[in-house]
Image (cartoon, rainbow, N blue to C red; front, side):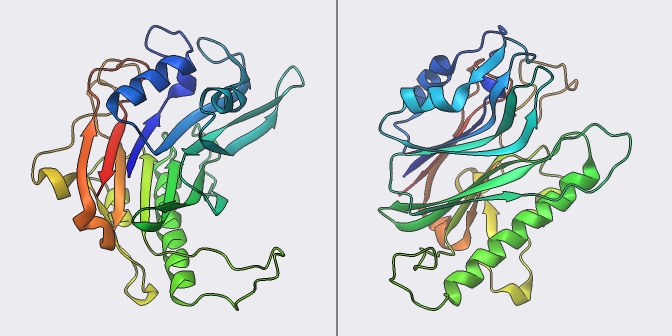
Length: 283
């Protein structure tokens, strides 16, 4: 299974041109992906650079007819001109997806600090390896307090899903909403975390409470590359948000998948967004 995660900055390249088609071409040049996880997908935000004043989710459905598209809006608001605006994360899968859940992440007050609501989309995908829970997210950039709370919430969500897999609900084949769900402890957590590998948030993601019975999460990069640091995924070409390139886009895998990580790569050439995409391949 091949997965690409990418903060696409509402599909706005460094040339300030918004192009969904270009992003998809660049992603397909990396791999014939089965799952595509995108952050910063916009609906009806003409004020954003390059003009994102259209429904990007609808356009993706047109351009990816063989994929199911699942969009989770972290921001869902009334625009200044009265239009409904949304901004969030998206999972596109050509593999069957028996269930999807969207989880708002903590948003503790941090007065005077710029911020927006954040969320996590979790899609259970039926892969040749078995059911796999793909979680994608985009954590707060400006508020360390909010970002740490959100990282802890991701760990808690994963632990909760692992507990459901270990202790499934009462069997129900009625076809009603209470019918059996596909629960799995196998997971990939990916996205733009807005933290670096030296931070408390990074350590938090990989620390599962001992009593939870969770399937611990690990950064997939060292599993393939050892001590070689992951290349920068942000500010590689665009330094508006800081002076130096940093790595803040990660892929974490559950313990049972560690031996299945065949490849993980960062595309260091594309300028189709202000972030670089990351490819994960499991065998």
